Length: 324
Image (cartoon, rainbow, N blue to C red; front, side, top):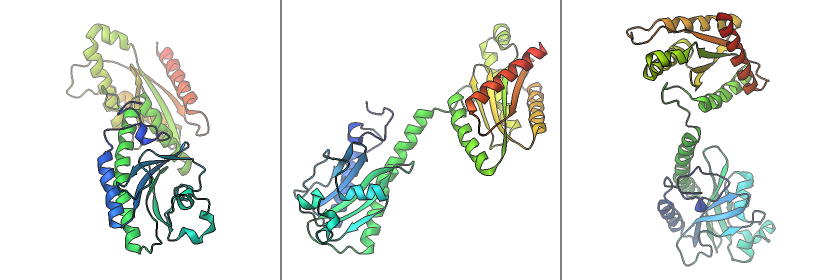
């Protein structure tokens, strides 16, 4: 995977570098952590199904693990405990707790103390751990534990920025011509709206719109005028539905709206408002007179959404034929 490519959270960050992540800044944070705790080793460790990789290691001669080292996922190490419990772990003296007897960090490397906190991806999944280790028994006060939490916030802020960037790149949810959701954006937001409707027991309606004889508009008036018609449709849709409703351009001259309704009459009322809006061009006299066909139906929340979208499209075609 190349730099700035879509990031996969189940791959090691060191194998998929990204401009938005400053390894140098992270290195300074890990070095500072080890210095403030007067610890011989500090780490940022990433977990994936492949194992635990040391992403950043404090730059000290006393640190036995350099960056890039991978430990097996089933190894009985401190970081594994944090990933499993999703909470901080402080072991002041591992030598008096038999559960760490098979821990290679204790058995082979001689570490005695461990303090670590989980680091999360923006979606809530565990990225890994941020930790310090010592060869001697420790007695860290609450202020030190609070400190390590504050320092790991710096790392999570970078991960959040990376997550937002990748989400925007992946979704690319806006149609540049109309300024509303494109097909992908509509489907993603519609899925979230349906989940909310299930929780709140709301009713949703689905409208599917197609401009009548749009090809004729392009042929007679030019594609630039056709683009103005599409932009006008988007403005009308935004004006006729609630802010919480979801609208989108599915491609060409086809638009959709997922709306909250109380009953079937609401569907008819919104359909009428939309069609009325198409005839009200305001000061824009450059648009030709046009009409549209709008199909739709009440949404069944437990039925496949894509199938209902296709059914709404067919309903729109029936209405179009009925007007021909």
